Length: 567
Ligand code: F6P
Image 1 (spheres, rainbow, N blue to C red):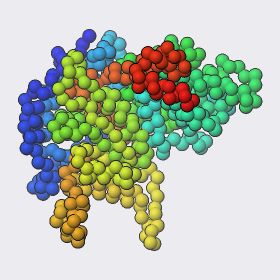
Image 2: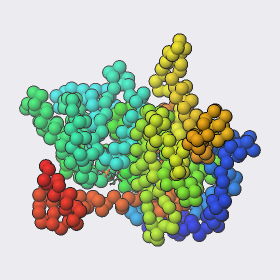
Image 3: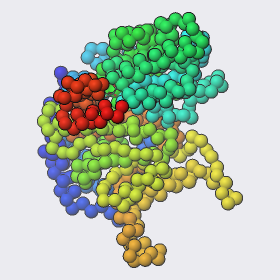
Image 4: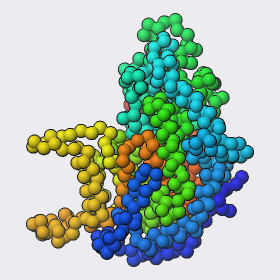
C-alpha cells in the first residue's frame, strides 16, 4: 500500500507556518475599507482566472502576511506532493487502500494513465462510449419500451453521490435539454429517499410504457436504492398490466425499462437487470465524486453526449489548472487555504455557498456531500487524532431568496460566515420587466443584488453613515453594519455544461486542499456506517418484535412504543 506523497500526514499544527498564522490571528483586525483605500491594486492582485472562471478573492479577510503564511503552510504540509500523488493514482484513500481518480474520468481519450499496472483511460472511454450510445438511442427514440413506445421519462434511482450530482446538474443545465428532433425533452425524475413518499410522488402521473429506470448505486447494496428499485419494478409490472399491456413478457419489460450503473455488476445481474444494460465504473471513483462517471447516465440522456463531453472537458480544464498552477495563483488551492484560515484561526464554523442562479438551486446540497462527507473527520489518515477543527458546515440557497431569509445573520450576526457568491454574466432565460414605462433587464437587477451583497458584507455601514441618514440615535447601533465579512466572488460568462464542470472540479479541489492540510483521508466515509447497521438492527423492533425492542435503550424504546401506539 502506498500512502502517497509523503511518509504520512504532517500534523499541520507543528509547522512553522501554523505558528505564524496563529500569531497573526492573535492581533488580527481586518479592515477591508482601509485595505482597499491604501492599496488600489488589491482587487486586481487578488483576482484570478482559472479556465473560464473569474474569481475575486479581494473581499476576503486576507492581507499579504496571512497569504504568505498560508502559502508556506501549503509547502510545509506537502500540498503539491499530495496533489501529484492523487493525480498519479497512488492509494491516497488510505483506509480503503484505494486510488482516488475521479480526475481520470475526464481525461481526453488520447491520454494515458497507468494505475496499478493498467491504463485506465481506455476503460473510461469504453464505458463512456456505451453510455453515449445508450443515451443516443433513448434520445432518438430508437430505444423503445416493451410496448414499442418511445421513452419520455427517465427515473434515476440512487442516493448520496448516486443522486445529488445527477439531479443538481440536470437542474443546472435545464437550458440544454432540448432534443435535436424537436420532440421536446426527456424528463428526468430522481428517487432517493427511502421515505415511500419520494417514490410515490415521483412515480405519480408517469406512463410505465414510456418510462425507463436507471438504478444507480456504486455498491448495489444500499438499502434505500435497492428498496426503491424493487418498488419501481413492482410499479412498472403492475401498471403495464393495468394499462392494457396484458400478455407482455416480464423479463423483456425489465430489460427494456431497467438499466443499472454500478461497480458491482454481479449484484446487478442478481437483481434481474440484463448485464448488457449495465454500465460499470471503478472503486477508485468515490460516490461523491462520481457524477462524471456512468452515474451521470441520466444527465447524458437529458443533455446528450455532446454536452456531457463539454461538461467533462470543463472539469478537466479545472483539473489542469489545479495540477499545474503555482500555489500562489492556484484558485482551488487558494480558496482551500483561505478556508483553513477562516475555520482554524478566525473561528468560522460554517461556510455559505450562494449561487446567484436559480438553476444552481441544488448546488449547495450537492456540495454538502462533497465537502462534509469528505472532510468531516476527527483522525488523520494514520489514525492519530486531529488537533485542529476540520470540515466546515457548508450550506446555502440561491440568491436573492436567501437575502430575504438568512442573510441578516451573515450581515449583522455574531458569527463569522465566509460566503462564496457565484454569478453569471448572461442569463439562461433573458426577460425584460416593464416598470413605469421603462424596460428593465431583470438579469441586470439580479446581478446588482449579487454585487450589492458582497459590497455590503465587505464594507458595511458606519455609525456616522447611519447618522447622516437622519437615523434617531437610539437605533443607530441596530443599523450599523460592521463589514469585514469575507466573501469570494466567482463569475463566468454563462452557466454552460463546461462551466458547471469547472465549478464542480473547483470545489472538489478546494475540498482536497483542506483535507491535505488537515492530513485526513478525504475519500473514506466510515462515519455513515454505524447508523446503517443500527437501522437494520432496530427494524424488527419497529415492525413489532418485542424482544428486539426490549434490547434498545430507554429513549429508543419509548419512541418505538409511541410509533406502535399511533400507527
Ligand atoms: O452512505 C454514504 C454513501 O456510501 C455515499 O458515500 C454514497 O454516495 C451513497 O452512500 C450511495 O452509495 P451507493 O452509490 O453505493 O448506493
